[in-house]
Length: 482
Ligand code: SF4
Ligand code: F3S
Image (cartoon, rainbow, N blue to C red; front, side, top):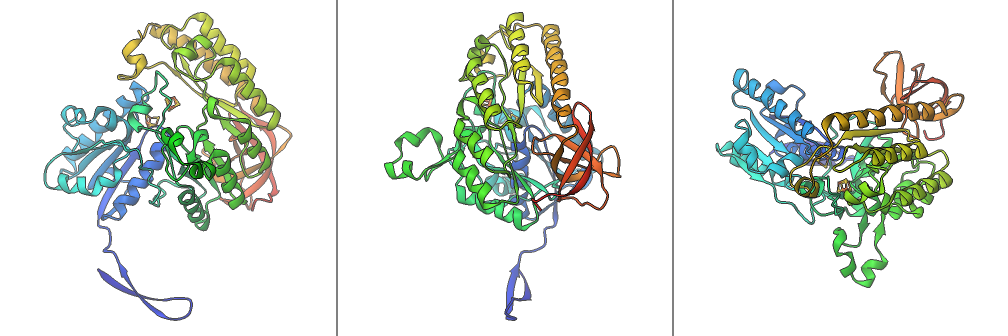
């Protein structure tokens, strides 16, 4: 240990022990959802304590980690391609490089990964990242290492993430892990385990650290944020067994959201993802009450057909979803609503598909994430249902959904023309180095000339025109949020 001497505010000399400088280089890349990106920041933090600094240069890495997604076959193929690339670098440039696979694909394939991909030295599932230092010692000794044990407790609440690729303005803060919903098409309950919530004080502390470091926006993250519940333990399924005292003092999502909004009034608060059956009127009221909670709800529905929703084991009907939409529009009139949609789920007929289109017409989403059904091994749909909608039909239906969404996005963005919106400046516009890019409360991208404004500032922007996905305007001054 090296010793360094510092003075405190009272002028007293303090002797601090400093950890040896990190000497090894970690190259980490992430695929899939925000949860994976957030987890990679936890991994970087764990490894920073164990001698690794991150690098953006693959060729110089001592350790390469890829945080993987299993949601669709295409996502897995992308990772396989990246492994080929690492293999080439290891062969031609850096023979000592070690390669590890993290995340959902690691959890799904387990030791098969080590058999199928010779380049892989290390396989670690989403709940086992604290074991990485031990696993790396095994790898250093020349053996392959694996830990894919799912936990009922782990939330990484005690780890301060290293903000990778951060713009220094917005950050992800994970509040729940896992999912108990068992939608029949979805691999997540198998790769992420049981749903558990993180202790509220550790969430508040992480946000305080972000605020102290100049961050202006956080996204509370989980597979199912609306079912957040802390009662002294985080495991949702055991709540019924909790004592009366624990039940009386439990913190649910409405309360957590309010705690964050009140505790950090100059910080913007977003959250994702919501599940229709868990989102209640009370959370809408909290959003409406606090200006710093953004007016955007990502509300995946996957299909507009009651029959398909049932086949998917989605725990709500089309009518219940529409009632929720009505409530959102009533309680938060300028709220943007966005979707996830699957085209061509097993047994989907033309009529079911038309139900999806008509639901879209009803809601007129601001934007969405739309995919053709991809069968996932191990899921109920994968085991019990025939993937019987032909590929051309799936693709044609998907195109119709995408085209309709494009029309609705254009309608939604055009509603802002002539209005003034508050924007948090996040980065330079991709199209011009003369313009800033940020988002309004509804999560729609806004670009405008830089003038004297800076990244991390809230500005009021008058919207002059738009495309289907972007608002174009001119800043007219700082907003009250600064
Ligand atoms: Fe998957 Fe359904 Fe859970 Fe979402 S709610 S993560 S789709 S099982
Ligand atoms: Fe993919 Fe796992 Fe997220 S399957 S979408 S990375 S939870």
